[in-house]
Image (cartoon, rainbow, N blue to C red; front, side, top):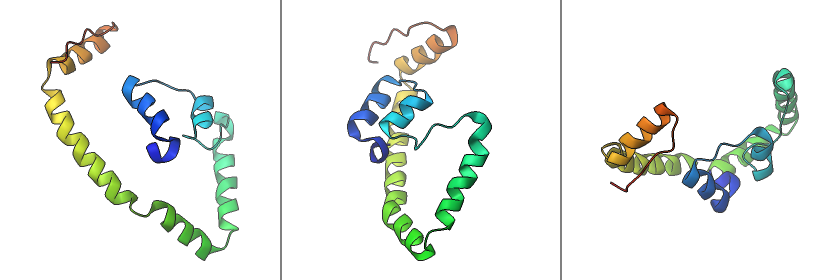
Length: 112
């Protein structure tokens, strides 16, 4: 996500688990545009046509450049997250968070 929205915005979303709507997603760069539900397929197809009208080799090389190293980065971040989550899943705070969510109340975390 930091690649899309920048470190500052990603940190905010990760730290507080903020829910955002489509307009906010567009504003911070998480989404390209906001389209009414009824127009999603038509807009997606129009966008695909725009890409298809571009020079194929240019599109392919641009895509490769933009995504270079992304798979390795994702794999590394996922491994790190798994390592951290295994520890956190065993914590009291995790159990409290789950209980609070199911009871629709504010959690009382204590850092353990």
